[in-house]
Image (cartoon, one colour):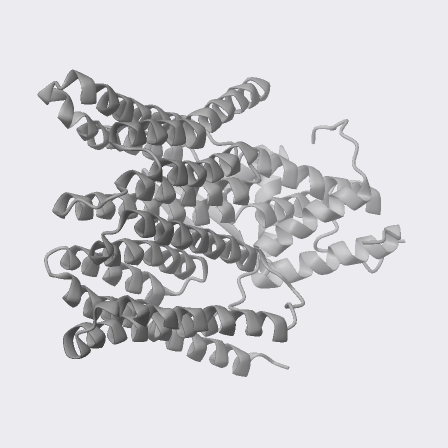
Length: 96
Length: 197
Length: 200
C-alpha cells in the first residue's frame, strides 16, 4: 500500500530521529536515544543508514574527555523529509 | 534486522508530530536569567528613587549591582549550556539578540557616562523593549511580547516625568518585561520537570 | 515507544511539521536592497549635515535629515511593486520582526530627542541601535561582514564620545559605510553567485 513512500524514512526509528533533527538544529547521540527510547545498538545502526543515504551528518568530538557524537540533518535530508510528508498527505487525502 | 511492524500513514504522521513535540518541550527556559534581571534592575531603580529623598552617598553606587549580577548570569548560562545536548534554531537566534542587547546597554552606559543626555531613562526603556519583544515574538510567549510593548509605552510615559519618577518607570518596565514573564517561565519549567522525573 | 493518548488531527500535525521544516531553511534572500538604500541615505544625510554646518554655516543644518523621507517612499514603492515571495522562511520572518522592532525604536528615539533636545548627542545612540540590527542579520544569514560591520559601529560609538558633534557627523557616515554599504554590496554579490550556482 505504501510502496511509494521513501523506504529510508518509512521506518519508526529512522523517522523519529529525522523528526527530532528537524526540530532542533543538532543533537547528541544520547539525546536522541533518550527521546526515542531506543537501544544504543539499534539507534547507531539506523543513524548509519541515514548517514549513508546522505540525510544526516555525524560528527564525533570530545566533551570533557568523553566521546560525543553529534547528529545534524543535511539539506538533502530536509528535502527528503519534506517529500515524505507530502506523500503521506496525499495518501491520507488531507487538504492543506 | 528491523523487527518493527509496518506503519500506516496515520501512524507515521503521529510519530513525527510526537517527536517534534517532545523535542519542543525541551525549549523550556528555566526562567532564572529573566528573574535575575527582573529583580536587579527594579531594586537599583527603586533604591535610586528612594535615595533622591534619603540622600545617602553610598547608595549612589547601587547600579554597580548590575556588574555584580553578571557573575550569577555567567554561572546560569554555563550551567544551562552544560546540561544541554542539542542546539535549536530559535535558541541560536535568540542568543544573538541578548548578546547584542548586552553590548548595546554597555555602550549606552558608556556614552551616558561621557556626557549626560536628557531622557536617559526613556532611551534605556526603549532598548529594553527590543530583545524582550523579539523573544516573545519568536517563542510565541505572550507575557514577554506584552512586556516589550510595555517598555516602549513606559518610555513615552517617562518623557513626561521628571527625574526621580523616571526611575519608577524603569522599575515598572523591568518588572513587566522580565520579572513577571520570568515567574511564569519558572512555574512552567518546574511543572514540566516534575512531570518528567 | 511511549503511547501518548494525545489526539492528533492530521491537519494539526501537518501544520506543526511544516513550521519545523521551514525553520531549517536558510536560503539567502536578497536583503541587500534595503541595506543599500538606507545605507546611502544615512551616509548622505550625515555628510550633507556636515557640509551645511562647516561650509554653508546654516543653523538649519538638521534639515539634511529630510533625505530620510526618500527612504520611506522608496521602501513603500518597492513593497507595492514586488509581489510577496512565494516561500516565506523562518529567517525572513525573524528578520522582519527584528527590523520592525528597530524601526519602532528609532521613531521612539526621535520622539525622545524631539522632546528633550540634546540633538548633538544623538549620533552614538542611533548608531548603537542600527548596529543591533546589523549584528543580528549577520548572525541569522551567517554572513560575517555584517557582524564585523556591527563591531566596527561599536568601536566608532566609543570614539564618538571623545570628539565633537560635527566630527560625529563624519563618523556616522564612516560607520554606515562599514556596516551597511560595504556589507550590502557583498551580500548582493553573494546572492548573484548563489543564483548562478543553482541548477535551474
